[in-house]
Image 1: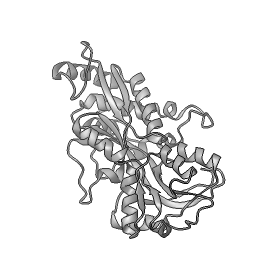
Image 2 (image 1 turned 30 degrees about the horizontal axis):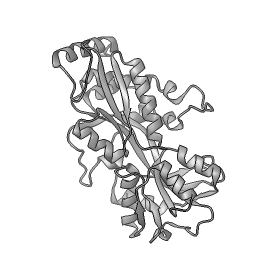
Image 3 (image 1 turned 45 degrees about the horizontal axis):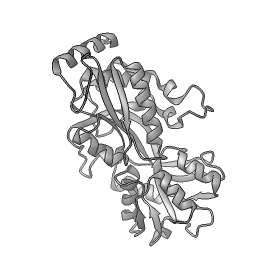
Amino acid sequence: MRHDPDVRLRRRALLLAAGGLLAGCTRDPEPTEVHLRLATGPAGAVYRRIGGALAAHITEHVPGATVTTVPSGASTDNIRLLRAGDVHLGLSSLDAVITTDGNVPDGISAVCRLYDSHLHLVVLASSAIARFGDLEGRRVSLGARDSGTQFTALRALALGSVRADGRNLSQAESAAALEHGAIDAMFSLTGVPTPAITELARSRPIRLIPLQEQADALGSTYPGPYAPAMIPSTAYDGVPATRTVAVPNVLLVRDDLPEDLVYAITDTIFTHTGAITSARRDDAAAIPEAWQINVRTGISTAAIPLHPGSAAWFRDHKR
């Protein structure tokens, strides 16, 4: 039987009134008001933009909910913040959540799958680096510490037996360091296009190193979260289409959030996707990655279980 969202929201108010505070939350005396924290990512990352958009639309459309964003190192850092109770929601790449034995950390589940990130390996056009193996001994940004970029880049380097001189820099820091010659290459696991690389390509000619072999190695060694992909020629000025590996991104949630609250959050994400992307694709405020958000793929969170509230929403909106 299809559930009425208004009934769910009224029931949520009763649950919150009866159950007291959410873990780590503060609230006004009105029991229907909840203050949630959403962990995003570092400067220059798509996680910052899409996390901010999600927070704004949940605040606007879920009665009584206010969501603030928390800057972070990204995926691995967000998982740590969730498990510690410092945030209630967080973005993560799928591979960083699933352990090598296929398990998921206790206390967290998924709201939904959002969009896929592509692993970029960026060098200046004048660089002598032509292939993945040329990273041996080079100064390479692995992304922010505890980020999904670091997680996936270290896996790829290990599988290729490549020993790079790794640095932990955010996307914005990586782009600036590459532009000024402080590093030789940068990894970035992110949406396409990503702001930091877009700005770099406008100031200096760049190249993307093909990662087809790394995609195959990651997919065969860690089945599930990895798939071969292509960064299109339209992504960055002067950069041809380049083969790489894609990893899905998910919105995670603490298991102890009430079912009806997570139901309402899930409903907002899929009902107001157009507002999250921006009304026009040529709008400067548009978030291209959000165009991938849809009900058909949203339920596909692999080994990560859906929160009961999200699972209920997907059951109610089968197509």
